Image (cartoon, rainbow, N blue to C red; front, side, top):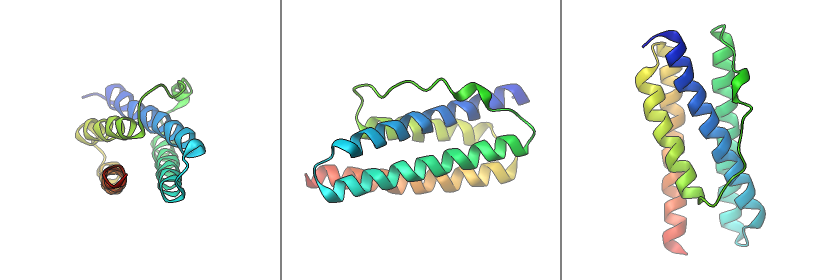
Length: 127
């Protein structure tokens, strides 16, 4: 995979993170259960932080990330669906990333989001 294609895959991940973050921020504003609201806010902060880290890595590599401002408003999807989509984007990004440092960062982020996903599912099962 050439550099342009690898960048496109990473930008799709950033876009997915930003969209999921928007979903989580929106859902947290309307959550009535305090513990669930805190979980949603925590996941939203993680997504924001991970987006920042990846965008920093893109710029460090001398690439540009100006094409990711096309964020759409959250639709009817649930926070579970949004996070599932983002985790799927991680799989593609990890498999297409040549740089070992970036790949390690993506794997760490993916692991942390998987843990958050499990907490989110547990919260849904308890409800």
